Image (cartoon, rainbow, N blue to C red):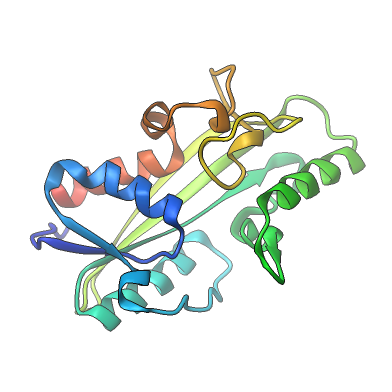
Length: 202
């Protein structure tokens, strides 16, 4: 396991919510955190059909372009009754000609469950795979899973993505209703970052 020894880290994303979460989770280590947007980097095409494959594409592209270590995540919600969909294609379900519309994506998910008359609880899990890549091509991989269920209607305005329809196991609130710090303790991304911190920063 390679340790992180630098003082700068690129978070390979244009998603402000993901960047903010990563900055908060890595704040104790005094690392300067920037993102693709700070370097004018384009989003590389995600051509893999696995979370780790797409995270690798993004992390290595940013590391090569900046000459700095870069971390990327690929994450999504997998719904049991939809055979694991949308999964790796979670963000694609939100794509419109004018950008991503997650209200539309959540509605599409609910409609698909209704069309299948899926039984309750409608089990699902959020998955997150993080890849920390160095400019020399080395990388380390970490994953986190948050089990729960899809609920309807949408509840809460916190978080991002599918948070308002995902209720983690053991909680009465959706991720959209949770305080950010509370969610980070149990979230798929929080768990993956905790593994990254233990492996590369500890």
